[in-house]
Image (cartoon, rainbow, N blue to C red):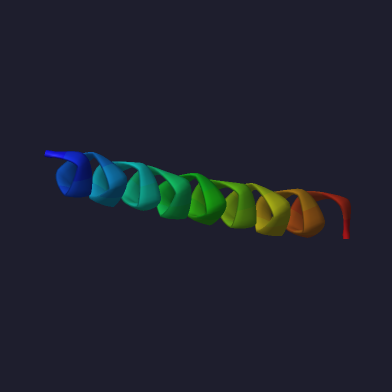
Amino acid sequence: QMDNFYHKTTNNRKQIQNLQAMRDMLLKAIFA
């Protein structure tokens, strides 16, 4: 149970990092 929870939180963190990276690229493209 705990292992499944940990797996979910790490997946969420990866998704958040991906979203932040995409947002940074968009901002750079807009303001370049």
